[in-house]
Figure 1: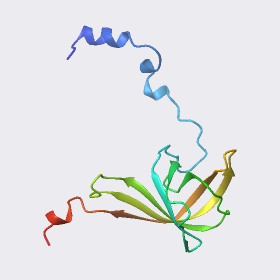
Figure 2 (figure 1 turned 90 degrees about the vertical axis):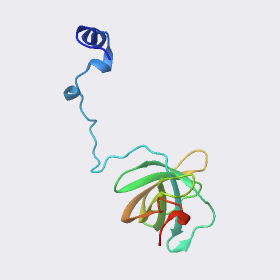
Figure 3 (figure 1 turned 180 degrees about the vertical axis):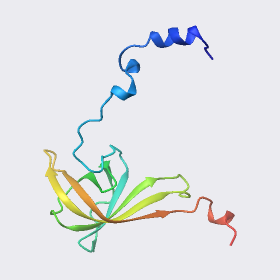
Length: 142
């Protein structure tokens, strides 16, 4: 551990962003009420307009917020279509302690790319969470 003047000398050698006081840094002009987190989480579309989805198993989120998410999908879903989504928030190798976000949502934006995929934006209507038990069943006392 460095003490006294040695610590000040080390900090004075820092340049650039490390020397900018945090009160000077401004948040980017975000027009969204709920800022998005750029996370790649596994997402599955379970139902589209009440019908089970069987054509494509799993995609990854591009970003997610408390009100919706964005993902790339191999086919377009019309704007306004209700969907049932499952997002893996925490995945454990043994399956114990995993957490999934389950939501009823609707498509609010579709954008095609040059490779034939479609970026879909969903707005959450209802959200619930499913959590697996932390301990394997053989260790749970009933």
